[in-house]
Image (cartoon, rainbow, N blue to C red; front, top):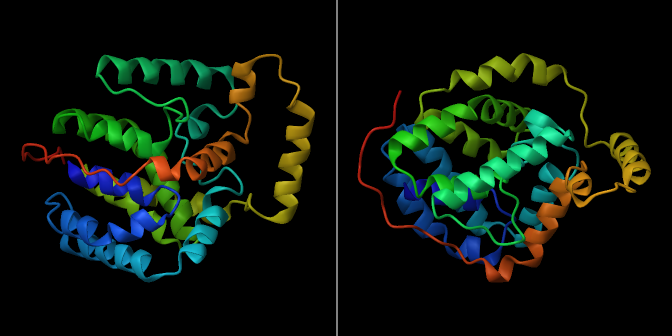
Length: 245
């Protein structure tokens, strides 16, 4: 499932390496049999725009969508557990799942970061991929609905993942509620979050600190700092099979 690696890279902080890999990514997307022609065409066009857009503009758009507020966080467990201690245990469990599969993370990566999760899935067989994507379908639907509401091309990624398992309706299930949501990326909303963070910054343990709502922003910053160490990686193609629909 090389397409999962492409989708993972599309969710990472934009880089010159990403732009240079555009043709390879388009070729992989064009051969993704689990997506319809319109879906493949939409991804192909977006990748082309990434290649031709000024890098600083791409990075500014990324920051605006992912580094302000938590509604579009790419940390999966933030949408399930928020800042509760349950999130810490969930990450421990996911890390153990990765290790048992021989998938090791660097110290800079959080296990529930969606691009990391997609890289892990790219190493699994298609039945497992289908099952694990189904397990997070409600999160993908919520992300896709919120990104569509903000008219962002990034919505194409969770939309494609849902299409692979025939769960497109997961987006519609969230659309009405998302349209009524108050934005959490406005100056006033961001000020309120930072005021809360200032009060909570005296967490007594590293685990508590790891669960702060600024985790997503720290993860994005780490990704930026280590971008030069993370080249575009395309895994060998998996054996062709059909995902469940």
